Image 1 (tube, rainbow, N blue to C red):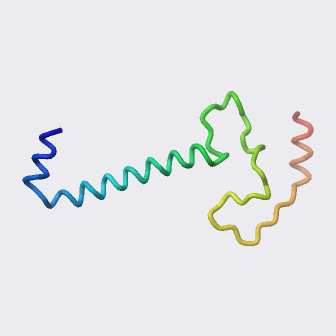
Image 2 (cartoon, rainbow, N blue to C red):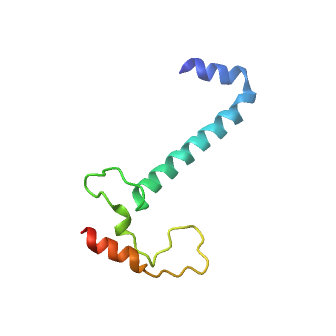
Image 3 (tube, one colour):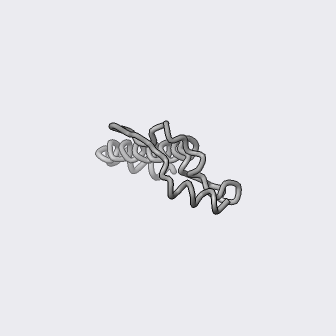
Length: 85
């Protein structure tokens, strides 16, 4: 670790690069953790809930921007869902 800081002391032009890389790594990690804990379509344990898409609220938009979203149940899919349960 001290060798890394010595390298940065010798080559000062690497300091912004290291800063940008640390910022990008922190952003990617925080985004992954955010999506893991807040988005219903990301699952860790498939045995507890094998069909997580059934828990999603259709009135809540799942995208960043949703324009003119209208959700209506599809009769054929509802029939299949009733028959398989």
